[in-house]
Structures are given as structure tokens and as C-alpha cells.
Amino acid sequence: MQVSMMINETSVSLDVEPRTLLVHYLRDHAGLTGTNVGCDTSSCGACTVHLDGEAVKSCTVLAVQADDREVTTIEGLADGDVLHPMQQAFHECHALQCGYCTPGMIMAAVSLLDEVPNPTEADVREGLEGNLCRCTGYHNIVKAVLSAAGGDGGAS
Image (cartoon, rainbow, N blue to C red; front, side):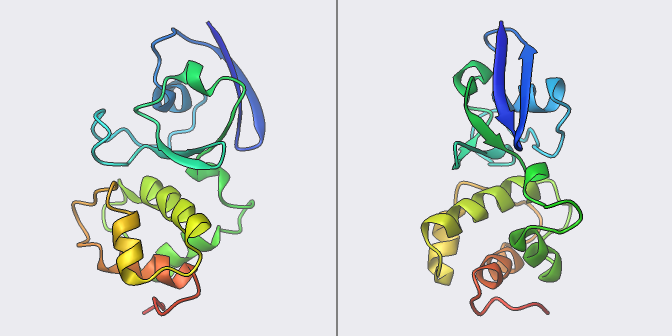
């Protein structure tokens, strides 16, 4: 079955089996490996992307459900060599260790700030509760999101 979508502002049309998950369409067929497969059960959030501007866990969406829609992955956030403000904040605040959860965490955080532009620490923690990190303890992740929002996260 042919599935077409705009991925990171580029039109992509590929033949896949109807049961192909969006995460596998992105990684295995479109070659965008920044979106990680963490659990295949929607528990971890490592596969979070934006579908028509909304954060979704791409392991829960079939590629055919994204047909004729817009997908943004972690690769689509930066503008060439210029990092997205959230990516920059994660870098400056040292908001990663192994980095496996980072793409999904950043995509969820961008979506959170779209909905809550001036979040409190509690807003950030609640907004990212569907994304798991097994390394950091979340402190610097929360700090990075607050920093990207222009709040008191600050770099250290």
C-alpha cells in the first residue's frame, strides 16, 4: 500500500504493508532514525513525533493513519545547523545522559510549550509524564524545558 505524507516539510511517498507502524515507516522506510523505538507499548515515549502539530507516540499510530498528513520528527526541528530552542536548552542544561529518550522527550516538550507557554515546574513534570528517562532523574530535563520557555531553568 502506498502511503504519502509530509515529513519535516518534505513530501514522502512509500509502499508499505498496511500494518506498518509510523515509527517503522519513519525509521526503516524514510531513513529518519532520530525517532527511537523504546517499548512498542506506548509506555516510554521515545518514539514521540508531531502529527499535524500534536505530539503522538508513533508506536501507536499506523503509517496509513498518517497518510496525507504532516509529521515532524526530531530531525525536522533544527533549521540547518541552528538548533531549535528546545534542543539548545537540552544541550545547555545537560538534560541527557545516554540520549535514548532525548528525541521523544524534546518532541513532547515542544508540544507542551505550544500548549502551556509559561509552565511551572509542576506543569513540566506533569506534561512529560508519558516520557520515561532511565538515566537522568529528570532534574535537568525539567530545567531545560523551563529554560526554553524563558523561565528559571537556566543553564549551568
